[in-house]
Amino acid sequence: MKESLGPKVFGFPAPVFMVGSYDENGKANIMNAAAAGTCCLRPPCIYVSLREATYTYHNIMLNKAFTVSIPTEDQVVEVDYFGIASGKEIDKFKKVGFTPVKSELIHAPYVKEFPVVMECNLKETINLGSHTMFIGEVIDLKVEGDVTTTIPVKSDIKLIKVDLEKLRPLIYDLSLRGYYKLGEKIGNGFSDGLKYFKK
Image (cartoon, rainbow, N blue to C red; front, side, top):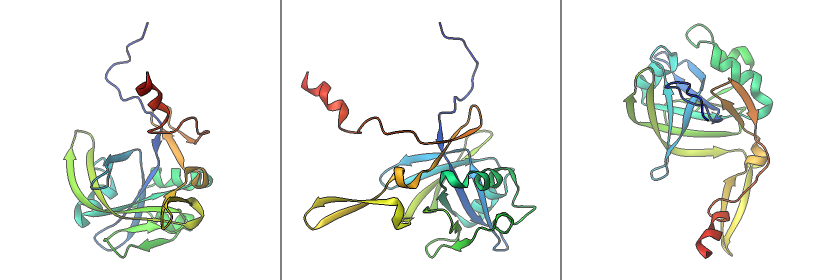
């Protein structure tokens, strides 16, 4: 029998999204967003949910843009620091020795040392209570070549995809507040379940 724990969110491991923004003086900031993910495929959109008390909340409201950089499992210490330090009080980039890069497409910075970045224009905000959901339309996905895989579609067409096994991204457990690395692949999407169509 299941035990009731009340109205709480169970924190499935979530992606570790590092949100980049500029303040009113053009100072680059980066933060770790615990509530974040994909919310639409066409147009491609992601979301980050932030408390109004955060520095990043006000930066995004001001500039209507943000980036999301994806770190690797080797960068867990810096990632956690970016989540607990406040950009109001310190230059987090300078503190850890990372490099802010100004996006050429939107008014927001990203982290040079993280291998993947999504550059987003703010599409919509939704006040949900303790957090406001910022929905960003992805204008561009930039990746380092060593974390990609090329998939042949036709003889003259190839797709470049981010390869999770090469990227080794972090995931976060909201329930127990732990960082984890990905495990082994155990199935194939849009493939394994096809056996039930044959019965």
